[in-house]
Image (cartoon, rainbow, N blue to C red; front, side, top):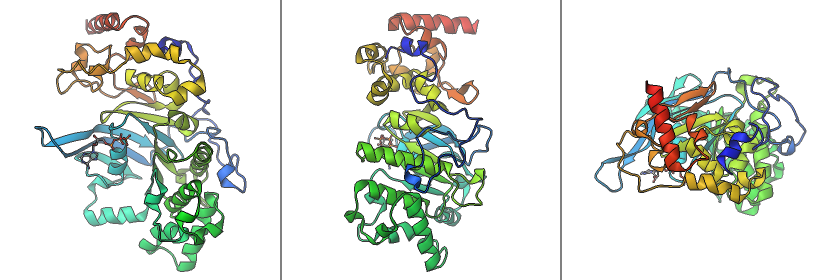
Length: 410
Ligand SMILES: Nc1ncnc2c1ncn2[C@@H]1O[C@H](COP(=O)(O)OP(=O)(O)OP(=O)(O)O)[C@@H](O)[C@H]1O
């Protein structure tokens, strides 16, 4: 896809249309007795943007002891911020090593963080002392769904016992209540209650991923963090699991639950088209920094950061599904190709500067993540001007942009 083509296309043509954020929130829409097949992905969207976030991450920085090299620590996440509202699915994308899993692990306290705020329903969990933090974790407000369900399900335990584990560890409810909660969780993920008596090895891969989701939702968490939840599945199971996640976030757990109680989700995925079908927003990570965060349909249709444009231009899933030919894609891929020769920028430079054909001196300083329009933030000194330079060659593009920046400074 030539990015000039992207420019020309209407904002909603690349991905399935999203229901406006302030419109019908789809509460109860499409509900049937089988929750696993109740809705079309993307048929209804998440919360209004004025709903208070249930998760608010601000300035999160994570570093690890360096495995090699002169520096003693490697910073993997820098100043990362994102929000998740009740009933909202936030996709996190970025190439391998950009820090997606570290972000997920840091949010649940599995990776130590150096700075920042991780606010869950008004509590900054980074500030909790060790015991309180353990209590918070056991409380089950945030649950994980892994790519490989066998990581969540003990092969020697029946599915029922694995699903119940969160309740038994927290000592929640009587045995009968726990069994009822397990049956309810299995029902919500579309599994026959008889599956409870089987071992994970005796059920299919798709059923196993459902069982691991049942385990994650059994104690009604506020937030589900799914790390590549469908990448190990075949196409049909992938769709079923995506539909299931979509249903779960739109269906309050109990009859007396309120909008505010709807499940929020973070979904980490390399598969952009899967995300396009169900996510409301997307956060784009590059080398541990958020470079763009906005409504997914709009971001995928008209990315505002050159790195996002590169990701989308080189994503076969989006490309094949939404039309443009490989030939059309060649130009942005060429223009935004990796340019490893362009090192030598200061440590404080924009993380993408060494790869970006539009980088200028201004990019020797990290751009702030700022709203380009309400609800859509971008960290690029050259937003929105880089786009207009796309159809020229990269050298001319950079010259154009330098001029633009100099003019701005006058
Ligand atoms: N415990 C650790 N100690 C040292 N370095 C780590 C640790 N965990 C992660 N890293 C490094 O942090 C960087 C980001 O890793 P992470 O797994 O978060 O990336 P990712 O975006 O999830 O990648 P992928 O898409 O391949 O899963 C990598 O360079 C990785 O080597």
